[in-house]
Image 1 (cartoon, rainbow, N blue to C red):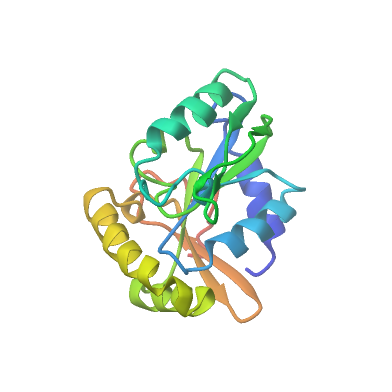
Image 2 (cartoon, rainbow, N blue to C red):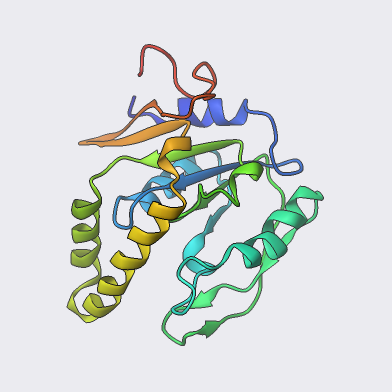
Length: 204
C-alpha cells in the first residue's frame, strides 16, 4: 500500500469534477502531514499542481476564504480557464504577486478545510489524513517552534470551531494512514464512496 502510483492511477480514472479537472482534496487536522503527503502524491501524478490553502487563508481569515477560492480558482477552472490567485505572505501579512494555475487532468487542493461543504461540489475525491487531532496539533507546534505558540493557541480554537460546524471527515472517500515507510489508504466513511475507484476491498 506504500506505493502512491496505484492511488495516482485510480485518481486519474475518476471523472472530471471541475471543468476538465479532477480536483482532489487532502484534508485533516493541522500537523497531520497533509502537505508532505500532497507533495508526494503530486509527484506520483507526474507533477500535478497543488493548491495550498495556506495561500488563501490570512491571519484575520483562517477559514473565511471560500469566496476567494470560488472566485479566483474554482469558477475559472470550472469554465476550463486558468485560475489566478494572489498567495498570502504570512510574514509580511499581505497578499503577494499573483500566481496562475492552469487546468490539469488532476489537481490537488491541500489544507485544513479542503473538503468543506462549499468545496465538495467541485471535488472528484476527498482524502482525509488519519491522525488524532491533539497529537497532530502538538506535532504542528513542535514543527513551528515556540515563536508561533500564540498563533497555535488561536488556531486550535478556530479549527475546533470549523470542524464542529463544517466537518470533512464524514464525507471522505478514503482515509490516508501514515506508515513507517509510506502510506496506506482505507475506505472512508462517505456513504457513496466508490470503493472500486479509490480503495479496493483488499485494502480496506
